[in-house]
Image (tube, rainbow, N blue to C red; front, side, top):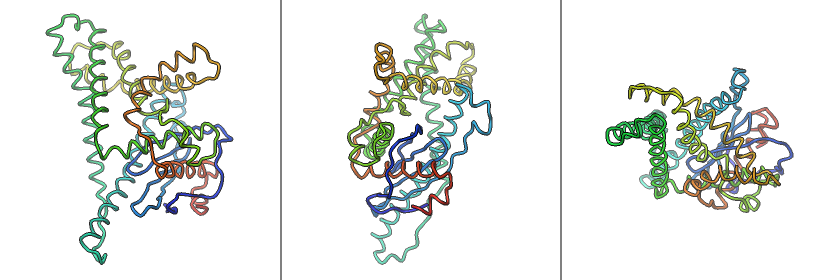
Amino acid sequence: MLKISANGEKPGVFINTEEILVGGQAVIEGVMMRTPTTYAIALRRADGSIEVRKGVVAKITGIWRFFRFPVLRGFAVLIQSLRLGYRALQFSYEKAVEDLEAKERLAEDPGGHKPAKKANTMSMVGMFAISLAFGIGLFVLLPLYITTFLKSYYGAINNWLIFNLVDGIIRVAFFLAYLGSTYFMKDIKRVFQYHGAEHKVVYTWESKEELIVENAQQHSRLHPRCGTSFLLFVMVVSILVFSLFKFGSFYLIFLSRILLLPLISGLSYELIRFTAKKAFVTGGGWSSAFFRGLTAPGLWLQRITTQEPSADQLEVAICALKEALELERTGEPEKALATS
């Protein structure tokens, strides 16, 4: 772990001269960026400095070779992303609590004699478990229950294909309503701004431009390979996949919804990756236009889940990507820390 000066500057010019695929996610007051084998989390602390934690990502495909196959690799990437995302959120949560408690201590004890308390890791685990249960309940169980209830009033829903279509439409409606409600949450606004910063910096790297704030500001905050777009793909793909497996019991249908998630996530990963690649091919003609149409709904949704970042938020995202790239190139965590 290291701290960088308030402006986040580090020596060295970072321009994409290699085809290194990068991505990331927004966290509390910061951004996590990752490369194929490394990650870096950069946070803006209350004193204006940027704190970084970085490390090496063990590739699941290197441990279990069968995860290299299409669809399976998508599920492997999802699991790895969830684990890394949880780790990044936990780190940002701990630092946010530290800054908040430091502010409270300063107000109560200007002399600074009151000892600092450590963030409770278990509370983060509890919030994650509650969020997972809430997600399954809202996006799987409740749509299924409502659709099953509607069967008694609308005979057409007894058709298995129509049943899954109605179930999917309700699921998408809940998803859109949930995203819409978060847009008005004051505390979420800065997370959405960091989300926008992450996208702009990724675009800067993919455009083979120097990683500086001025370049990042010129790019869109909407990116076709965003997690928001991925979730929308999951919603649509699930309608098709669920229609292939018919069960009579409500409980068996619900259980199948959970068990089929790995397949759905793998298919969605391959689809969004292929679509994003084809959508922006220069001179692609009608083919590119078709794939751009497929990416459009996800980009529209990102108008909710991203907001225009400030220059200091872009600095944080740039810092995170530089640290991850530096570690990717050296492959030596200790050496990378020593040169920071």
